[in-house]
Image (cartoon, rainbow, N blue to C red; front, side):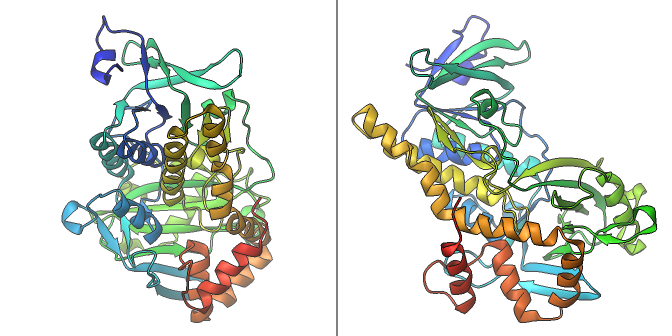
Length: 436
């Protein structure tokens, strides 16, 4: 019989616990994985190094793709439950202000959401607990436990609670959902691919009269103004009303810029905010939180996604969309996909059969995202050229039909079967692109 989280926190409790699956990290990827595994009847340990509620660097804006995942998990996304709904994306650049509604599709809702990550992540983890997952908070995983004979991961060691007591958790399968740094993946020899794009995001909050906006807002003109010059940067700034009297204001930048490692992005964000209308309130005295930053690992930048009993989900596997920097939807989707593969593997009668099922996970991910992410990598290279970025901003926004197509492409919002001509073009391009 396995130990409960409450048992392990007692001074005289055992220092080892077992389960069918261990999930390391209780962000959107880990909580979603744990939810679907527990729903299927598997015994799941969900290990989180911090304690809820806890903050994460994020824009807090969710596209219809993420909204669908929340609905699939049975989470109430109504405004009565504290969610702010949005109609679409407002794009500003090249002297143009364009409002684009989310597309009407059979596969995804036609609205997005906004919610602070501290609250959002806790909602997901509590849903996983309701499904039966066993959560250990303040549980800092220190490394894998390996089978000496096979080299497979068969558990993890960790420091638990205030006293950082050494504990061991064992399971035949482990899911790395521990984010971009993914110490567990590194300990298993899985390093970041340098040929895949990376981004960074920096954000803060301001009290603002614009807090109740029903569009997510994206500004396409961020500038490198060093040495008296003016070069457009490959990325965008955002303004997302939170509905609580504040706005989340931030920027995302790709490493395809020559200035990527040279600029202080906090100063770039401050300079951009200083150019906003004063009545919006994006001024230092209205800032409610410090500027914080985080890395955005994109386009499968860590592979393989399955090896020797370890599966990677979310940021640990570099699942962020290179077109728009969105990570939450893909974290949750990869968690659902990983859980589906694990459930099928668990039902196999032989070790060889289980391994065959598990080895399908990387292929499933590449079938779903590979071609699209390849297109995204090409897009990243293109907009890394300041002239191309500037031309796209100045010319593209004056063509609403082109921008409607661009919204579908960048947000990955199409109907896979049927759909309109735009859907068929985007889906066709993703199918013919190599799914590396």
